[in-house]
Image 1 (cartoon, rainbow, N blue to C red):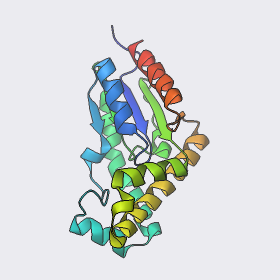
Image 2: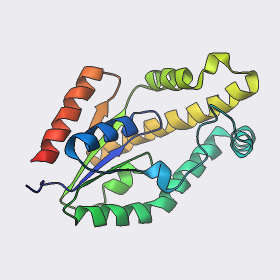
Image 3: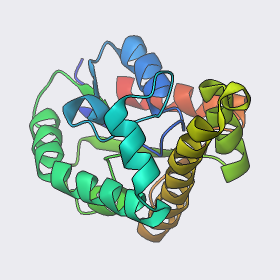
Image 4: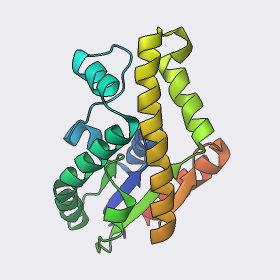
Length: 195
């Protein structure tokens, strides 16, 4: 039986849980999962090991410039992502695409009728706690803490932008800070993709 949908797009800022949700849904419905991070890597997390170029990036640039570069990176990726989404929406095999490069303002301009879209978000306090825990922030030296802080600021700014753009364009958002609500929404998405 062919699903009414051929593509699921999951967007959100870093550490919102797109990869985890995508893997769960992909496994349940038997669809491959594509990560936008693997399609075009922007300077990522300054942990667990800080690569020299990543350290230079976060130490030399202002928080505003770091976020600007992230947005430019996403804009540059969009034509390729749009083509991947279009190809997937025309296939009969199904595909989950996840990652922060799936900007709400870009997704809103898509017309594929067989694409389902959902965004993930949480309060900035929740996301900060998640990133500090994963990076072992409290155990880091002062220099590494400063690098991590710039990454966190970039991600929180992105979270605010994603929420605002999603509301403006009427896209579905799931608050990942409530595990039971997230589980219910994941089950709902799986059921829709199986229809």
